[in-house]
Amino acid sequence: MHMQIRCHPVKSPPDVEKLLGVLAAGGVNLVAVGGSDVEFGGEIAVVPEDGQEQDAMAILEREGYHPRRLDANDHPALRGQEIPNTAGSLHAFVSEVSRENLETGRIIRDILVGVPTAEQIAAGVVPVHVYSEQVRTPANQT
Image (cartoon, rainbow, N blue to C red; front, side, top):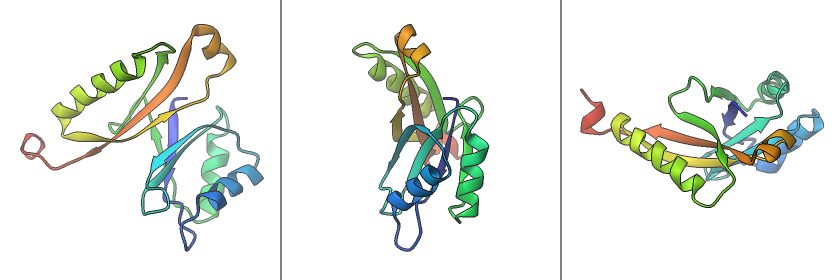
């Protein structure tokens, strides 16, 4: 789970069910879904199964959703990590992201927790994404 696709579920009116329906009809398996205010002007974040990223992007583009792809390995707004499936691990990861955000003028917009694969279950980890947005602060206005 190294990337996610974000877009507004807008089809007049906004409708998450329709967006998920076009992905389902296209045979795209989602391993994580999240977002905030998804039918109130916010974005939905979906993570397709590995190997289905291009199909998901093509379907969403064809249907007029204007998706944008974010890679957790090189997008400053998105942090992805496999965290231990133990008490306090999510807190520790979010605390780490929060400390980094203080330095870069970002705040957390949403958290996405994925469905672990068989390999991740065996390793005792859970995939997590934290998406942060830039805010205007004196620290980032130099």
